[in-house]
Structures are given as C-alpha cells and as structure tokens.
Amino acid sequence: MNFDEILSEELFLNEEKGYINPKHNSLLLLDIDDTLLKPQNIYIYRKLPTDKTEVKLTPEQYAKEKVTPETKKYYDYRDFRDPNRVYNSIKTGLPIIPNLNTMDNYIKNGWKIGILTARGLEDVVGKGIKDFLKYKDKKGNLKNIGNKLARKLIFAVNDERKNYKGNVDFEKKSNVMLDLLKNYDRVWLLDDDDKNINAINKLREKLRNTGDLKAGKIRAIKAK
Figure (cartoon, rainbow, N blue to C red):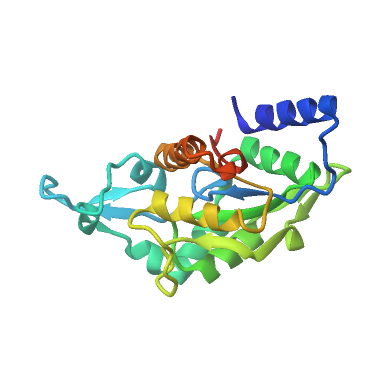
C-alpha cells in the first residue's frame, strides 16, 4: 500500500466513524534524493579494499550499498561538502512527479511538510530545496513552496555543525521523527531507501510491543 492509498483509506475510515479532525497537526517528511528529485552532477566515491580504482556512485547507487560504521571510512563524500555543488544538484534536479503529487495531496489534506535527508550542509540544502520545490494550489496552479515549507522543518542529518543523534543515517532519521512526535499528532516519512523505511517500521513494531502510543503516530512508506 502506498502513501496515497494509506491516506485515502485513513480519511475514509475516520469520516465513517466521525473521527476526522480538520485541525489535526500532522507532518509529512520528505527525503530529497530519488524521492523528490533526481540530483544532477553529484557523487559519492568508494574505494573499498576490493576496489582497484575509485568508484563513482550516484545517490541512487549509494543507497544500495551496504554501508556500516566500519565500512563508511571507504566512502568519500567530498561533493556533498561543496556548497555550490550541493545547491546546484538540488536546484537543477529532475522532478519525480508521482512523489510530488503525493506531497500535493497531503498539503491539500491539511498536513505540514518537512525535509528529512541524509545530506549535510543543512542551510545550503534548505536554500536549494526552497528554490526547487513547487506545489499545486487548489486551482491546480504551480506555486513556489514558500511558507508551506518552514526552515525549522528541514533536517540534513549529516550536517557537520549539528549533532544529530545516531551512528548511521537511518538511526538519525528515526531519532528526528521520534523527537518531532513531541509536537505533532503524526509524523510520516516518504523515502526511497529501504534501510530507512525498515528502520522506521522496526521502530513502530518495537513501540507497539511495549504498548507505547507513539507506535500509531510514526510511519515510513516507500517512494514511487
């Protein structure tokens, strides 16, 4: 079941039972790379002991790597530390229309949106995504995202100036979502990376097994 189907089912069931709350305070977090857009001209470089030469990986290829705290030292993220390259990779990114349509549907249903990415340089990422991202208004016209995306809801969990809790990206993303539950009724994530999705859903199961009500408020779904 995808994000749109889950949202439609939830709204239908709540309307049937009279539970719908027009003032709900829900947050949809969006990954960037290969979720909102295909980034352009930015790479991660791998040089494992088994690699004869340095291997250049796109973000999509990197997402399929089995990176652990022990093997992360063999990956070079220099492109992602270059502010100009980071900004341009987002601003010139190729939009992934089905996921942008999903974002529009959530905005129309009263959800706030935020960004949760494994990138660093949070301020640069924030500027890039604000300049890239558009949404459809009620008349179907494309508008700049503007104040629909608040700067305080942009999280780049490998920002070197911040100290996001966790050893690997999926732990950091999970911890950000848990922290946001202090302020939101629901926090859902749209992400292309199975490692992130599995981590969030394992967290859901753990919370459910301990009777923690937060289990019903956190969810991650695979991007299209």
